[in-house]
Length: 133
Image (cartoon, rainbow, N blue to C red; front, side, top):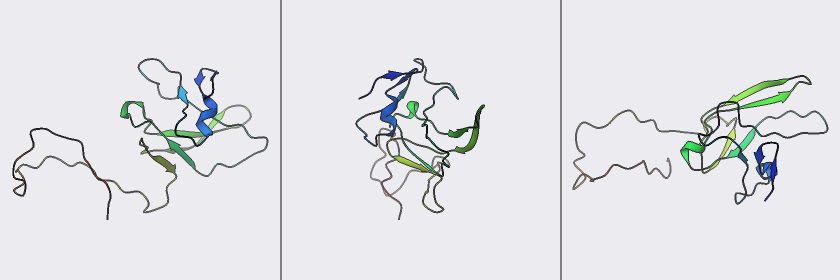
């Protein structure tokens, strides 16, 4: 399953397409600060990266919402693109083609109880959306 290298845990696992293995940035107990965690690849010749695919933990507090894709100029790292709106527990591909991603946004609580429910639940729960049609 890999080993520790350069302050990172299991870096080779980041690219193995196996969800039973993982890469983990070696940050403190409070998580990583912006710009602290990174993973990269080295190629023998120049390549142009057009998209990325990332699978993150399902634990919200362990997820990156935004990542920056950077390339080495020969002297420094240059940010080529930012990818926002990332989530966890599923594959995220960026950039996404038009009309391939949809979302629902919470706008506020209803002021009246729903008359179609026999009773109001005694607990609040997270949304349970399974699909859009």
